[in-house]
Image 1 (tube, helix red, strand yellow):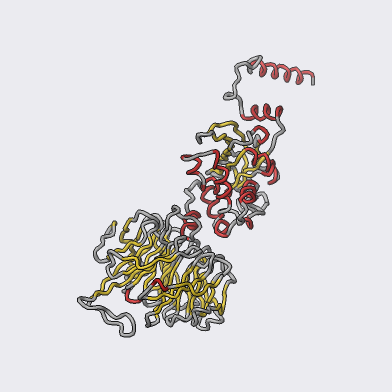
Image 2: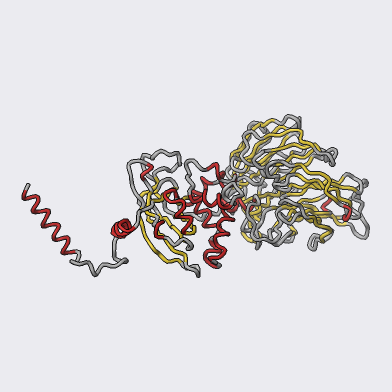
Length: 577
């Protein structure tokens, strides 16, 4: 026993000699993280936050002070804790008591071992490696206020990404706190900016998902997977753009385009700027006839011309619901808003019956509504189908008006029997993970739907027994589809890329032909025929004058570029064509 004690004494002495006696040579840069922890803990009472995708053990934590010019100064480094129980994993010293109350700080957590991959609150049998990073940014006083409740999560990372440009290139201490709070309300489902930021700083993925707004909640899982695999996480941001949660800028942005019969007029949906009516007699140089500002966010416009000089326009106006305008063709100054239906969600898309008496409305988290507009001044909801819907952003009515196809953005497409509009019935569901657009072939037997990076093709000739045929991959956030009039080609709107052309003459073996690159975001594509009348004026009302010639064009909703028209027969697609 004495021999063992002597050995320990000698060994301890050797260590002390090896460390350099009085320790003068030691600096903050050469100290180990453990030594820094011990020094800090002697001077301040440690406050521990949590790094949590699930709880991350052995992750490296870097704590930066953001200088007045936006540069980052590394102040401390930590390693997150291990543990036998989940609640003891992922802890690190936030140094909250050492922060300057009026300065901003960035916490960056890199790597680590995720012990609760599915966020169920139970420690997994083995960890999943985190290859990415998560961050949180806040003012010193806010970090001190949340104390031990501070959590670095995918949600705090979402906030950092939303303000990264301001932080890197245009940092202003005087306004940055306001920006943080304002952006927080786009993530948390509240208009209280202080509450939103506090919720993000304290966010616990196990129990707080209900605090998120709907879009972030729906796609949080995808976002976490991208972080864990260290992939660029643009999917959730892409969806926010497609669904109008985030614009490229404060300028008007074209969201969608629709047409009257004979392709004479087009209707541009322009988000927060309302909508425009365009004369398309010259497709290469369309002329704005009139524009209307709405109080909401215009996603889509559907016209109905009843054969007289009076027409109606039905507007999907986001959170402001469905709006109906009475449009006078000869004098648009007389046009006016005549009725509104508040839908208690976000009205995103409209399909209309041939006789103009019924609307089939995609109403976000409320699913689908069928609305009787036989008397446009007094519209009324005749049925609603919301069971099983996460979020619906598009509807498509079959030619015989017996079937309705409705997107359920996270889950796919639902096929609904609407032969009795007062009692719609879901017949089947087609699975998908990022469905924001779809289209039917001219035969109505083939359905093309968008997914996160592909187009999927289905045989829907038997709507209760749908058959998967094929898919086309390597697309960049496809979100809308137009089918050629002969059914042999589809044109796909790729959000950040342009228009892709795909040969579907054999739907089991589709072939990518090429792309037309476009400089702004692409959120809609429609194919239309332009009719030519030589040396005579057409009648578009009761007599419907037949044209002398016709030609096919694409109309593309292209963000800040507005409406882009493409002559299909004269345009070469970049690719293998």
